[in-house]
Length: 187
Image (cartoon, one colour):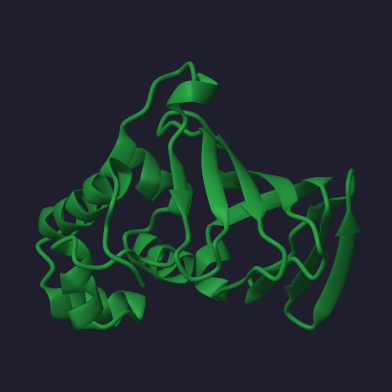
């Protein structure tokens, strides 16, 4: 993990603390609910550590939020989502870049664009899919999605609807970046 270096990550660190404080949770409470250590949560909240995608998904899930919902709360949100204003976040572990194309607390659909670098890989826990339904479309490159015991090899234009909550691995086994769009809704 790297040091927090941009305004988005600083706002995210503040938002995590606000979400925890709003619920009256201690670091131990959030750690127990998320499976993220107290030390890691504390470092993230103080801006000493940049969280990975997996860490953020676990923390968001503990707050009963999607990752997009957590990032939206950190950034704020408008009904019109101009490209220049869409929050972008880079996962320090995998190098993938996540653009929040559209998300609002009062709208049922969220739209995310991800660019996964060659060799990039992220494993997200089943808990991150407990209260959402989502579909993914590859825009360019190739992407392998391992969902539970299934493995899907997707090329540009291919679309995958996710099944029941299961651990999911997103991997770019190709030599070029892969860009994909994720549409999700809470259930």
